[in-house]
Length: 219
Image (tube, rainbow, N blue to C red):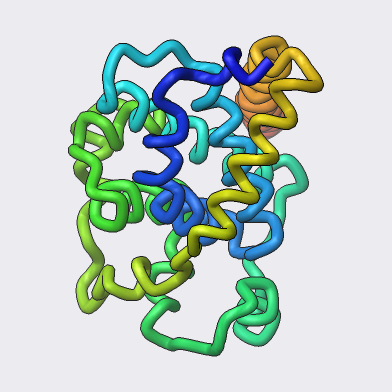
């Protein structure tokens, strides 16, 4: 069953494990969750049919943002206080990280992708599913932020990489990962639609309230 995993998977895992883990850590703000989200991102990479390394990299980075977005917004997680943040990150307190970790989710993702993972503006836009001009604006490095702090967030070793690889291959041997990935993608699209529908309904209620208030005032 291992043949179901994409042919270049082992090389891709070795190349991008650190970047994906750091990205998931910066977006989830929780080390335990970041490891699971990294696994989910590489599952999607393992099932892809990438034509080259560049496409494979775009695939795993997009997958990482998607799974982190689902994790972060599904339960409308609040940004933790400083003490809870360091505990969740399982790292010593470092004020140099705060300018990055306090950014809004999409801005944080854009900065990490562009300056932490080294993606181009176009690839950053694809990973965030937005247009390049917006990606360029979101990814502008905030004043005083040194992205070396991103590189120091996590440095997975060979053992961690091997354990992740084993989990991916085991999942492929047990289940239809392609079907799972399609299901997760459909669920993510639905979650996004729910947000827009809720905003639309809120706008309708606001418009109705304003209309009623204006009729009352004129009457």
